[in-house]
Amino acid sequence: METISSLPVPLESYESSLSKIRDFLYSADASSFSICANIYEIIINAENQARPKLFEMVATLYEDIESDETVRIAESPFESQEDALEEQYGKLVNSFIAFYISQHYNTELFYEKMWETIQSNLFFPNDAAKVFAFYYIMIDKRIPYFELIDGYQMSNEAYQSLRRKHSEELRKIRYINNIQFNQKTEHASLILNEIGIRMPESDASVELISSYEEKLIILVEALNAARATAKSLDRLFSQIKSDIGH
Image (cartoon, rainbow, N blue to C red; front, side, top):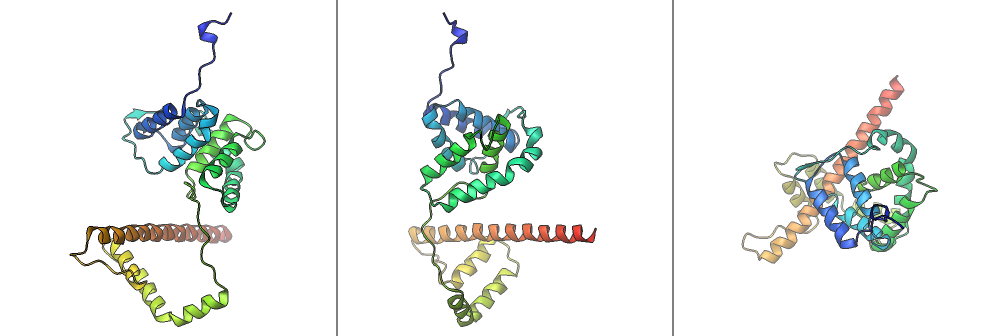
């Protein structure tokens, strides 16, 4: 007869696990790796059918929740292996993210596929590899995933023709992009103005101002992302030149 201590621990429900994850994210004081390792453990201890949905919810919440860092969390035993794990599995994780994005899955299916991949012993054969894959997905700029409509496409000839037609407007935007502003919203508002989205008057309705500010903050973030990419490329080219020089 089994003793009470030898009985299997019951798995947590989706609701209970999500509550634990939220509480953890709002209070944890630890590195991103150790935070993800602890969240991964909470998900693994949830009911099987709840795990992909919890994975999706973490991907949605992870970047937006700011911890008050009131609870110090011990370092994950796998954190010391992070560099080695990235060397071994980083490109593999990136390739899976890129592949599943290219399939244009709906949001639920995307996270189901990603979770199945993390759990595959063929690709990630041990706990350290699985925790790393989970962490590397969470910090990827393509996460959270969004199901997108097909974007507008045109031929190179049509694109070049439009560039010639609107060369004056494009020169003005280039000028705006290369001068200094006190606030990023000033910069973005002038770009919006050039593409026909005018600043609302001071007596405009709350709805009109809110709609404009939504477009404004989206453009600010898009410009921030473009600057970050440009800086990353600059660092890469500088490193290549340095390596060549040596």
